[in-house]
Amino acid sequence: MLAQQSVAERKISIRLACRIFAVSETCYRYQPKLSDENAEIAHRLIKLTDAESDWGFGLCFDYLRNVEGRSVVV
Image (cartoon, rainbow, N blue to C red; front, side):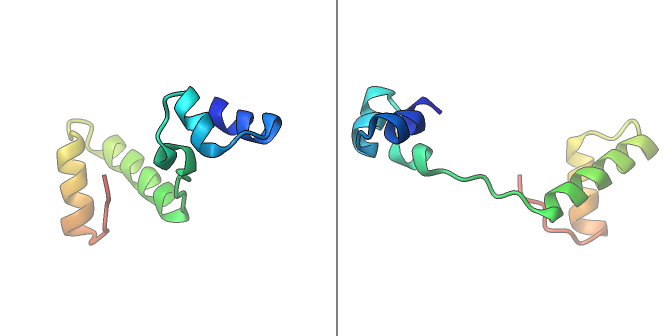
């Protein structure tokens, strides 16, 4: 991200960098939460759609949540 590069390389404040690049400070500080559970859910979705090719996202979501008891966050 350009704002992060500016802070690191040019030693400007986060507030100024965010203002220059029109980015909120929340967006600047955001760190994605990756987990093994996400990879497991992705793998399970692939297996579901291979087995049930006519299922859409909604049905897959409901199946994972209601049948397998997984807490799927969208």
